[in-house]
Each structure stands twice: as C-alpha cells, then as structure tokens.
Image (cartoon, rainbow, N blue to C red):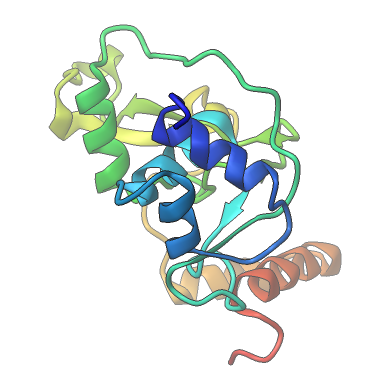
Length: 191
Ligand SMILES: [Zn+2]
C-alpha cells in the first residue's frame, strides 16, 4: 500500500488522464476510498491553477464528471495572505463560489489582463484605507488583477439590461469573445 496522501493520489490520477472525462467514482477509487474528493479538486483548481472542468463549466459534462483539460502549471508553493487563517480563507472562497467577485473569473481560467491562470485572493469589500475591517463580513474573493485594482470594474452585480447594453455597443471582436465564452460554457446548441 502506497503511503501517498489522498490529494497526491488524486493529483497523479488526473495527470495520467489529461483530456479524458473521468467519473467521481474513479477519483474516489484512485484516492483509496471515500474522501472529500470535491474539496481536493477545488484545492487543485484554486491553489494550483489546474484547469479541471466540471458540469458548471461545460455543458458537455454531467454532475460528477470532471476533465483536466491540459497539463497543469508547475506546482507553486502555497501562498497565504498575511494575517488570514486557512479557515477564514476557505469560508470566504466557499461563500463566493470560488469566483472573483468583481470580474467573475474562476481559478484555472486565463486572466486576459495578466495572461496567466487566475489565482484568487482574499480582498476587502470596504477598503482598509476607508476603515474596512479584516473580519469575515468585510472579505471577498478577488483575482490578482482585481485585487490590485487593475480591471476597473465596479462591485455592483450586473443586470441583464446593463450587460446587453454593454455588449451591444462593444466592437464586433469583443462581441465574438463574449459569444465564444458563452459557447464554451453552455455548448453551441443551448438556448
Ligand atoms: Zn477579477
């Protein structure tokens, strides 16, 4: 019996199945039994930038199916924001659905600003310079560039009318980029 931990086993199983649709039962088996495999997958996506798709990302996948779409980046040393406990970090990321609360990017997607896989940070809702506190209620998940103020997006949630107005007056190449992204998410035939 190997002494590898379940996360390491899942890592190796995924690496030997790049591009293939895998079932959650296979991941469980590879991990050596019942484990919180979805948490492990999230960690690989969130902390290491692995592009693991689920049914949330691709209409071609059913719940419980996953696909690692390409060779992941070199393993990076775990990065912790100063003063943030692992638990607070996990709570914020969970609450925010592992999605940047400004631009909507998720770990593993390529940030068009930096051209690198998205990594999420724990930012503030009300900035500390404006008296914002470090506590959970004033925290939110932000990608690196939004955390550094690079994208200039307001924190308001977009409405359909506002979104359509922005897309209608965008250039055609920008409209096509939106179309490609939606097509990738929902599949070409989903209306
Ligand atoms: Zn962002």
